[in-house]
Amino acid sequence: MPKLTSMPKPHVSVIIPAYNEEGVLQRNVEEIISTLSAAPWSWEIILVNDGSSDNTGKVMELLSRKYKQIRAFHHPFNRGRGAAMRTGFDNAGGDIIVTLDADLSYSPRHVTALVAAIEKSNADIVQGSPYMKGGRAVNVPFFRLFLSRMGNKILTLSFGHDLTVVTGILRAYRRHVLDSLNLKSEGKDIHLEIMSKALDLGFKVKEIPAVLRWRKVKKNGKPARKSKFKLARLLSEHLAFTFSETPFLLLGSVGLLFVLAGLLLGFYIIYLWLHATLDPTRPIVYLMVLLLLSGIQGLMFAFLASQNRSQRRELIIIQSQLRNLDKKLKK
Image 1 (cartoon, one colour):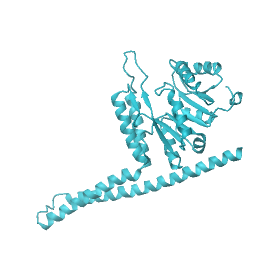
Image 2: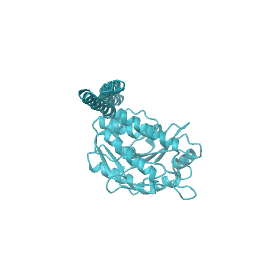
Image 3: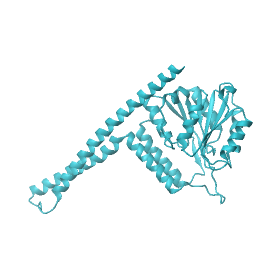
Image 4: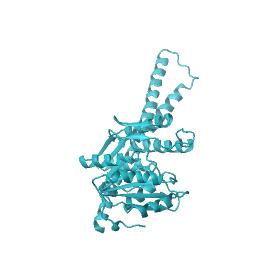
């Protein structure tokens, strides 16, 4: 495996996780190289083979022998995008680290745009968004695009920041950001974990327009879709994340709704009683009590969950401080 010391320290590291991309990997990487070769800064490409069952690993090794700026790393089995990205982060040598899909759903030109944006601003993270003004999605199946847009809208509300996308891979990070984060995610939820922890630590995030172009095409020319199982799993992960980020908004809203329903029912019972039309055989009083108790319990759970979220935020800050201290002691 090539060592970073065999070449000067790069300014930009481009991390590309890949799983079973044998058919397109060489062509796409060489397209990236063609773009980066015109850049005014030094660069490297980190390829991470996430336990592919095809010849992706062999293609990576061929590329790493052909180009001195490429290094390849391999997982013995498929661990997920998050694990692959963390392997890339751990081995990247650049001051700016860019993450990109192996299938080039985003053009390599976005890499230079991200680097230019992060260098010209005081942002710690710059991400490309197809959902902001100036961005667009091309050849993406309508249903998938709809779910992605809606999912990102809900997730961005939970973050409480003016962002249009939080699930995308197309990002540029200053090195100190990733050095400060204690990342655990194995799958695609790593994008959410990074953004959540980065915002908790006060890092600044900037967005630039990007073009998402669906490149995975079947023989019949129709865009390839994810399986319903994978899509359902991804949606459930995003819903769980939304709940963990804004527990009071979700639990509190439900609890408040139940309390209001119970109070309205209570006023209705009083109205019936005052007009001597209350039927003692109807379980309406029991329903009122049930609604009020459920609502109060929901509000209590919401308060406890919010306290837990606050403690988790403090823990993230402490973990970041410990990581930075550990790195200083090792120097």
